Image (cartoon, rainbow, N blue to C red):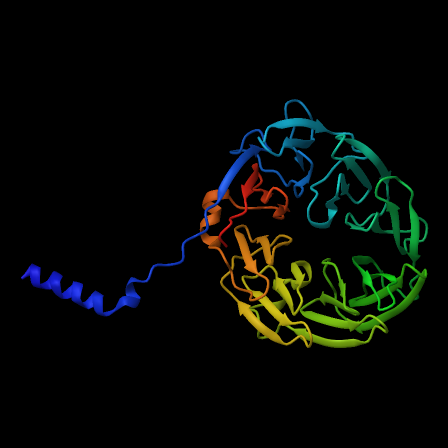
Length: 400
């Protein structure tokens, strides 16, 4: 009798080939090396900066004392992962350098706090310059050959935007502002681009709060002409820190529970779209602080919820929602038509279709919970990231 039961099962399976279709195989991850950034992974966890690389060196901060050196910037060899040097010459202490408080361009790494800014030369592994900046917003923005920051006038407490050449300390005030009411203004979320004449433009959010009233105004300033272009006052809500984006004579951005697009030439609102009915809890999702990527045709968003949202760039209409991702987020990196980012787990996304190309579920087992931006080295075709305990160097899979 057992023989006939087994025979029947075999015949049934042969008539249902779809049941035998195998799942797509996960691209292989080759971990080239992993290096500790704490002394004891069982008792210590580091809120380290995003990795920064130049030449044969990749650098990362730690808040622990390593080999007798207190809170160093650690330099690792990109090939072997060996610790090669450490640096601690901060002008006014250090802090957990996350999101826009840590960035690099070529050999220059910039780290900022609410009191200071340090620029480190990754080639010489030494200080390039450093500044004390009382009232700094602890975030900065590198554009062209300058580093920009928003801070407050020490005497009036009113906001202003400053910039310095990235290779030398020489601060210049780009724009200052005086509030005409009791609302407390604050400049954040700088974005850069060009207008139709080729002039260089900077845009930012003026996030005001006070007396129970919130307001986010969008400013546009022509750096080439040294003039304020316009101020958009359409948004009577608070806004998070992710940067505005300028492209093709448009300004794209996010405020609380809402995405928007403005005309760069005059500041008029072209479209807005809120997230009611799109995500489970728009207020808790905090899209205005999360991943914000602009592709040729789409606006791609991922925030604190498990939803990844894709909007049509031209009119803001909802195109796709993927609600299968983990909660949380880090900043994204673009490489060869794909977005690489972490929700604790590694996610590789097709920029054109919004499809996830890997299986994020297995990556935490391989790498630990990723707690930084996925930093791409396009020449070596590797990605650097950390999990709070180790800095990892992983080869980018070829068969995505």
